Length: 69
Image (cartoon, rainbow, N blue to C red; front, side):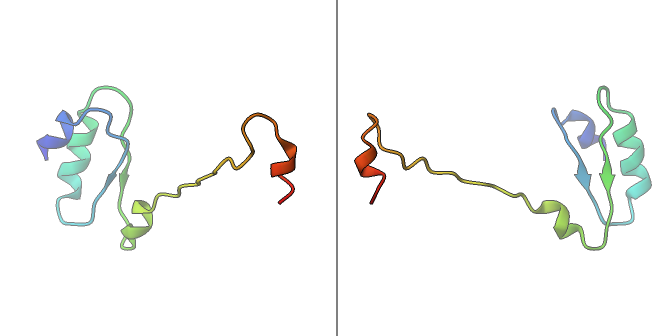
């Protein structure tokens, strides 16, 4: 569990197992921001990342006739 003290910029830890207390202590020994320990039997919901993609389809150069089609 001491490996979590060496990971820079750790945002959160998702864990399901018998070593929760040891992991909680290792996380509390870290310097800096508090790192939450997320424990849930449905932990897959914590691993979903939403991404939005926006494609700019406007005509370069200001030709508005291209936008009408």
